[in-house]
Amino acid sequence: GSRPVILCAIHSGTKIDHFGFLEDGTFKQRYLVNNEHWDQKGGPILFYTGNEGDITWFCNNTGFMWDVAEDLGAMLVFAEHRYYGESLPFGQDSYSDTKHLNYLTSEQALADFSVLIRELKRKVLGAQESPVIAIGGSYGGMLSAWLRMKYPNVVVGALAASAPIWQFPDMVPCGDFYKIVTQDFARSGLNCDSNIRRSWKAIDNITATDDGLQWLSGEFSLCSPLKKTDLDDFKAWLQETWVNLAMVDYPYEANFLQPLPRWPIQVVCKHLNFDPSSVSDYQLLGGISEAARVYYNYTGNCPCLNTSSTATGNLGFIGWYYQACTEMVMPLCTDGVQDMFEPQDWNFQAFSDECNSLFGVRPRADWAATVYGGLDIASHSNIIFSNGGLDPWSSGGVTRNISDSVVAIVIPDGAHHLDLRYNNEYDPHTVLSARIQEVEYFKLWITQARKLQIPG
Image 1: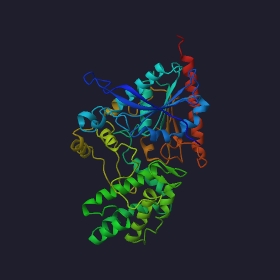
Image 2: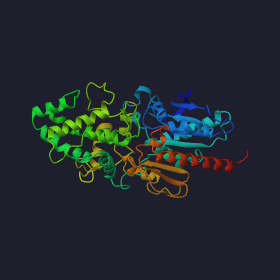
Image 3: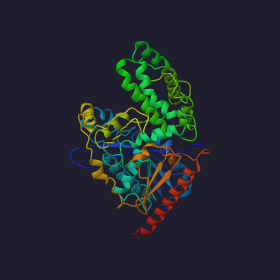
Image 4: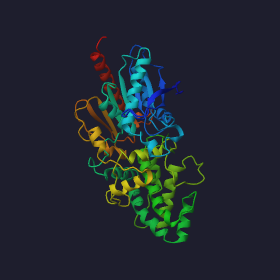
């Protein structure tokens, strides 16, 4: 349908540092508002906790909120995360050095959201009594869960979709993520995972000669020809391509990280159904290049493939890399047996050294467990964790009920936060029923909040 009108608003008084008193500056934080269906006598506010990218992009990819606004009489708010999109605490200097990056933390972002919600309730006529529900996907889903945990006075509940809040050291096995990626390919076509598993050795064999390197660059239509020293990067680029396909294996054409066909992994696997015992390295890599093109050139207007980028430009890579190098330490590893990748251990020291050389900071491996409770979240309430069975990030997600009100919804044929997307005729019934359950919980929380309201 036609996209409703959005008011783009700026919260100008956001403090750069909520937790110290030395840095006294403020910055402009962007947020989007839609009150087309809002019941102005205290109707609920659905508040999207923005993640690592431009907020307009998340707004357009969170159709669920638009689909349920009328039924709930809800105001929609999409708040941009500091340091992403246009919400830059130090303007053009925000990424200039570690001193300026110092205020890029999840805690500061949660405080931004909390302050913004209180401000909205103060300023918007009729919103004083409005119950607020936090909604987010992926890192944004982690933030919505954490917002409910840290500021239960500000939000009455949270929907945390595909939120890997346990993908931290010593919480879940580091190999589970890539196991799920592999299962997605194994179930989408004959020999699909085995041929990807074989491709790494085929790359080594063929690139042993200069002619082979040249052939491979031509076969993949690479924008810049491969050198011997690029091989690790080339493999990493392919590996990330398969991971991204697993995240966005949606049942219909979509354009989240890239424009893609419906069930894109099935389309990829059509190019990889060789008999593994007889396929030549050249044939195999020809198929791999066709498979990669499904992801990078589905529209057909991409003259060459660029191995230095794998996803949309709407995500803030440097910012997220910095966050991974400080608080968001997410161990991932492969063994080449239960997954289709080359074995790679999780090496915290090497990671820490890399962070130090890039940003001059070192990650705090255990901080997330301390500040957000780790596996021990039973003392919280009113949080829905939804996860898709096809989504590799579900490995670090909450997939079982913790209590009566900290609950898990699993969508077996869902990829990365499928439930947050617009309703679609191709949606599997599992996601339709997930959305119905989610709205039931919202209504329950809203009713609870109304009962608790103290007349004043």
